[in-house]
Amino acid sequence: MAIGAGMAVGFLVGVAARVWMRLVSSDPEFSWAGTIGIVGLFTIAGLTQGLALGTRRRGWSRRAQTPVRVLAAIGGLLLGSSAGIVMLPALISGSLAIGRTDWSLRARSIADSVALLNAIGVGLMIRADLWRGRAGVGWLAMLVLYTAIIGGRSLNLRPLDDGWRVGRRAWVGLLVVAAGLGAFVLVGAMFGI
Image (cartoon, rainbow, N blue to C red; front, side, top):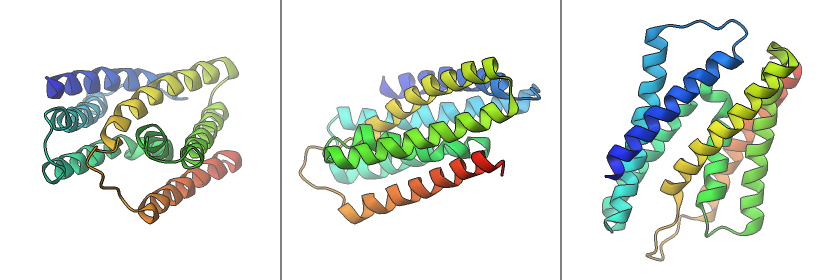
């Protein structure tokens, strides 16, 4: 059930993402290959998230869930490939901020801040290419779209109830990488790089 639902949600979000990409493009072009590729990536990401959610709901052991959760994390990162790379910092940090309920409020706030700064940077990039009204609608649509994506990805990042935890250094390292990517996108948007 979770696998089919994950695929369906991935497909629908992929269609919405394709529509959004057309909205924020200064020179919108349509190609079946591009559309199939984008919707396909989102469907694969939804499939992997559904698979991870299904294993969690069935109560699989950590040892059995870990490879599935890693696969789901990789599937989710597909959404940050190609042109989606500008939102990769928000995908990573936003998902961690929501999913890692075992983190302190301070750590989750830092992760939220990285996602917010990334979203602002992408908004500035959109604004540089489009007239104000269309850019505003495009940015708000992006926020809705990425909130849905981050919410879905965060399900895979929730801690398991077996007491084991990833070390703090690993999470800090991941946030530093996400913050660095976010800063790169923000600086690039401000200076037109």
